[in-house]
Image (cartoon, rainbow, N blue to C red; front, side, top):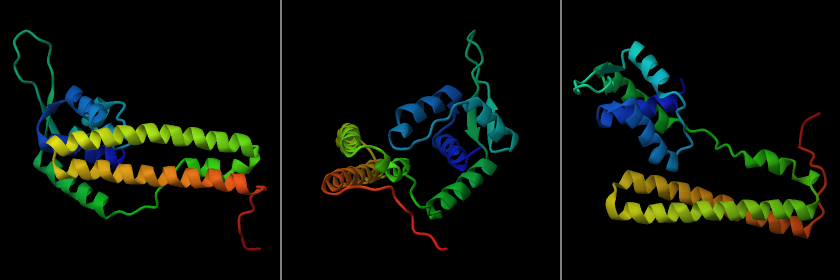
Amino acid sequence: MKIEQELLILGLLKEKPRHGYEIKKQIKEVISTFAALEVESIYYTLNLLEKKGFVKKAVPVQGVRPEKFVYSLTPKGDARFTQLLTKSILTVERPKFSVDIALYFLPYLPVDIARHRLKGRVRMLSKVEEALKTLAGQLKERSSYHLKSIVEHNLELLQAEKKFIQDTGVELGKQKISIPEWPHSS
C-alpha cells in the first residue's frame, strides 16, 4: 500500500467515520481534483488498515437494509496518520513530469509535427487551467484556506508548465534540432 493512499484514507477517517463508498466518493469528487490519486480497491486497503489496527469497522443497525460497514480511526490509526502527515510534509522529492521523457525524444519528430503536438498540449493545459480557476473561485466563497492553497499551488504549477511548453514550441521554430547527446563522462 502506498503511503499517500494510507495517509488519504486515514485522513478522511480522521474527519469522521465513513462507509467505504463515502471514502471512494470523496476521493473521486474532491481529492482527485488536485491529487493524482485513485484508490482502485478501497475495501482491500481498508481491510489492510484494519488488520494493522489503524481502523475499525462497525455495522450500524439500519432496519432491513443490507449491512454497511462504517469505518473509523483507532488511536493507533490516529498516531499513524500524524506520523504519515509529518513525513509527507517533510519529504521533498524532485517533481516528475511525464512530458519530460517525450521532450527528450522530441527531435525524432519533424519540427512542424512537434510544434503542433506542443500546441495541442497547451490547449489541453488551458482547459485544465480554466477548470482550476473556476474551482478556485468557488472555493474562495465557501472553503477553508488549505483547499484554496492546494488549488492555487496546482494552478501555479500548471501555468509554469504551460509557459514552458509554449517557450519550447517557439524555440523549436527558431533552430534546427538534432538528436540529443546527453553529457556524460568517458
